Image (cartoon, rainbow, N blue to C red; front, side, top):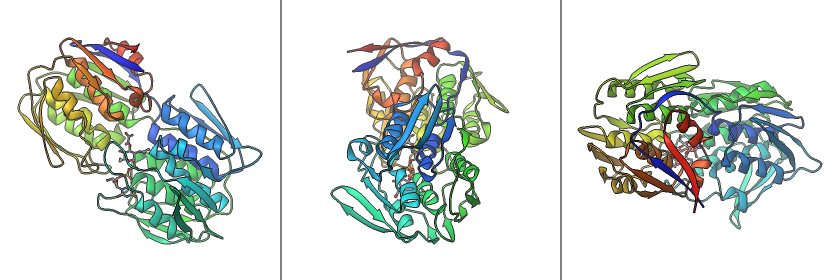
Length: 420
Ligand code: EPU
């Protein structure tokens, strides 16, 4: 198994090109199931999760190829409707083949995705939304088995205890585009990744209004066509490098980033004391003066993203004073804290809040990555720590950050991969 080694305490400086957004391209790849024609999708990041989605599409009878950052997907000789446990269990996002399978084939058998290290991740909203389009649903042998003679539009309230759901909105949308009549989704997710999916579906010929708001209307059409499409840049990768500039007292420019997708993050980091210049297609982040402690709460978009919570905890861990970071999407998403404390951080957990007493310095240590964003938080901590940090289980990182060592090395970091 590979591990990442970081020799810390280097100020990072330079320019990084932001990759395509993982969480936009996964549902968009699933949406290719909705057409009989070829789709070409560009700006796809080379990531573990993307390769898993391509395997799922192949298991469903699609010809799916990836070359460079471009995926070409078209129906093969025989289309299937079973998304197997072996693949779905490795990545929760694979549950979003349910909607397009039902929409196109009127039947689907998709493995139940199960729990996750960042806490319970139910799919009740996915199932409620799909059921209200008239599909029969059954959980049998660990699979969601669903069929419908015909899907019909419905009026769906898609909110849960923690607000809207990104992938449930995507799933219901993808089932509704080929349903008969009009569907209204209330409390729909408004994340940029959902908006990108809507853009893709509209390019295919779907009739959708209200993308980016919490009320989306879909008028079902009979068929959708194949298209060529380019994925938006990854706002979470962007935010991670912005925080890297802060934690290493650096000066980093993020090429290809969309500042509009990061308004809250830019606002919070500016308040923290970083100088941020945002222009079309670029964000420049510079450390100018000692940073201030912050209180941050994660919320659905346009609030502070849960996918940057762990990285923000690392930044606050070395920022003088007391910060409080509260997690309102996944209250148990704090496994990184014990690893950060091993590096000398002073963080206590009280319910869904991390109480962080900023320390002068972290010291390098062997640590273990528990999930994707926790891995990013440990890299950031390693970059600022004195001495050598060894991060094991970095396969989590390879699921969601493209060329991570290469990008950090180009900024002047001493970071490399070793095999055990
Ligand atoms: N929820 C329910 N019922 C459901 C679905 C969700 O109660 O049926 C709850 C969740 O437990 C959570 C909240 O609703 O408390 C929001 O979860 P959401 O459904 O929006 O999460 P998701 O769609 O499964 C996507 C991203 C996650 C990201 C979340 C929140 C993808 C592939 N995944 O997950 O990304 O954290 O939205 O923004 O788009 C990551 O990239 O590291 C990652 C975990």
